[in-house]
Length: 391
Image (cartoon, rainbow, N blue to C red; front, side, top):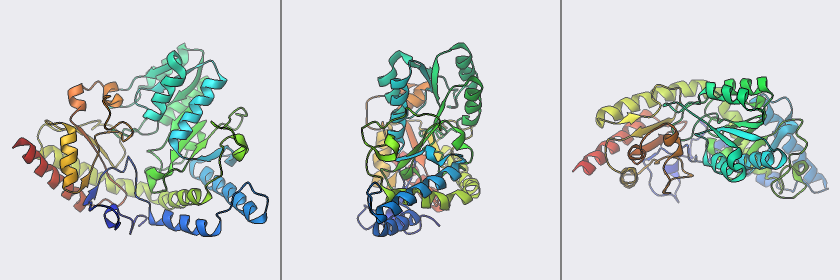
């Protein structure tokens, strides 16, 4: 399989980890990506902007990677693809572009990742419209439809593909169609979707963003797709690379690693998702039986096959996290970009959960090769911690 030999507990320099369950935060580098990066770093490390033959080869290889990525998401124009450091940079670039070149408003769901939500608040102020979600954490399409019908100055709609905290799948296809009907550009942060679910059709979005490290690729690598006719889009910082749309020397080895792993994963995602979802459903039943009073956020909604956001009946989630970590398990209290801060979860807040509930949440996110035995070990550790905290 893709991650064989690169499990977190197999790396000599890492602490002993019995179970890694924080894949929504980041993933181990896959064997496929590592091999592609190593090969490209040895053979094609040259600067694509230089004028000699070896540099021209790298320039062509980057164009080939654009075509590969465009094919994966069914984007007709590879020239729309920009390589960058990941979804955070890409999302900030989109919002900065809209804020700078339009006077209109941006409508975004209330559960967007902090790199969208915080950036939008900072750049747009009262030009930002937050769209509500239901109790399960799914965008209310009627609210988006009403917004597009009633507001004549919407410059962009931003709806993620899948939520990073509770895993709920968002109706991005339906949102895209509504935006097309009203002639409004649509931006989709697909960082959690890509590599877990088939990417077909995502290229129809006007703006699309993703990060390699969310699906076994290297950190500091990702992409942005922009509209074909957007000639005003410019880099956040000055520089001529990628037609002035993203400054800085292109990191071809990292791009090659990202695409190699994505291409390897994509054909098996349907089957893999079905198998892993069975593990997740079994685990949820075991957790709620072992720790009575535990609630699963978005339990009845379509979710990423790897994600459980549970509200435990008692005790601060940081106490759970630290004790599980001592037993060799890595879990999260929520979004890795907001963990450890005083602010409550904006996702759970938008879903009308209480502050007390927010303080007792654990996010458990598995990987492509997480086995039933891995889940059994985690649940055994949770039982042990539950007994310890109760005592």
